[in-house]
Image (cartoon, rainbow, N blue to C red; front, top):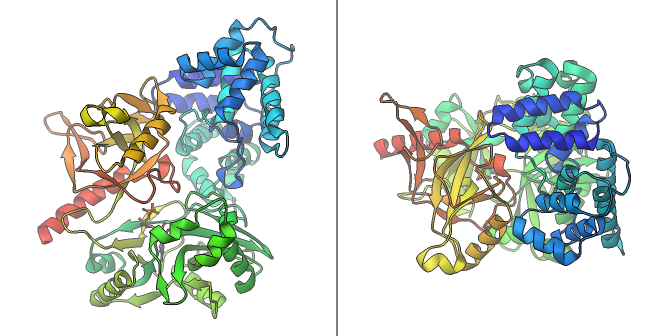
Length: 590
Ligand code: ATP
């Protein structure tokens, strides 16, 4: 496939405003792509070079792309800069200057998708002395041979701006449609995706090996598995009832989720978002080599800083200091971590995810026996709600967040939030007992006192998994420090969109729409029914539509933008409805 054809599809994708239309265009595109091109087309369409866990990044700032455009079009850097400032978008800048350029297209060569991809990959992985200039030239070469529309996407790709607003679920649906004409394979594809976290690989398997290859998909070491997630319930009784009278109740550690993969002496650690965080944890890598005897293994757990002198857990504010790019070894020495392993997914060639929790746990305890750093999470098994409560209280006293109860008979459910794991956190009087993670879909201009920061708050949304859309749930106007307002304004300015993005569902109009990208954490007093927001909206008898909204939401948390969550990992519509129902029940009971 020629890159110009791909750019044509992107033009179509940009022009549509409904997700279903997106699925159709994508399915068509995936069908047209050659078998060896499918994975690359998927990566490019999501604006990446490889699945996130491989950590391949372009490392190109706007200034470099501007220089490439200048070199390729013959305009001066100042002219490129001026056009960029007036357009506010690098793609539009490249397109305009390419079409106005007096330099002829440098060659008559039309690049294929494969050629562009390989060129971009080489560009991204060029490192060391002089690499900046090489990158500029490499991109310039592509743009110089491009048509204006191609130039637009070539300039956006290295800036992480190419993501066509296409979510993982939309790609999976399009793959199903491309292969079978409808959505019937979506479940199977999702399953394969949960086991490898690599959409390109899933697409390649499907288009090359057909449905059977997707059904036979197996986990493998060093490809992260999408993590299982916990549901929530407010009381010990409800938890035990849901788990048929008996539960394993584990302490809930507030630190870094770590999925540890090990084969011989090679170790990789993946985060909640499945990014490769191995570099951040040299102490855990050492411990994995020293303390885990098994040949090849995948463990799931939470790492938390631990005070060796007092034997106490440290709070999250301390643990998070381990998140850094420099001085890693020093910090590892002053703030050692313990990894509380709570699951085993794979061991020496055997897939453990289908085994019941109790067998996985047994194996985990056997394997980690006598360890110091990588130890099993603390837990009790109980049938008595008073005992569960006591364990919860003791966990809180010990500085932890609460507990996670686990169903003894359940499988490990990758990528799913289900009642086989139920979390219970400390509840705050008069407030919702849990925080909510919102995707920013828009923001407001500052008025009055805020005008000097040019920031008047955010429009937040939750993720509707079934619709693969972001539904508005609240405007957030408080909890921001001055520094946070400046930071948000700067970050959001860069991802402003002219119109409401296709995967956003909102009748509330912010001053500016943004690409759904950043996730923030808020605490609210209450969830209320709302005619204004689209979250979970349903038609009423009188024909009006009512959704849900947050009352008095305010920004909380250690980080302004959650680095461990992407838009699809925000709280979901379903969770909001559940929390609304829980809150009603708590109110009635309390
Ligand atoms: P989520 O990860 O469920 O989207 P979140 O990031 O806000 O939500 P919480 O709701 O606080 O996190 O709780 C779930 C997280 O708790 C898990 O993702 C995991 O990182 C952590 N955790 C700590 N201890 C345990 C445990 N014993 N079993 C399972 N998860 C645990």
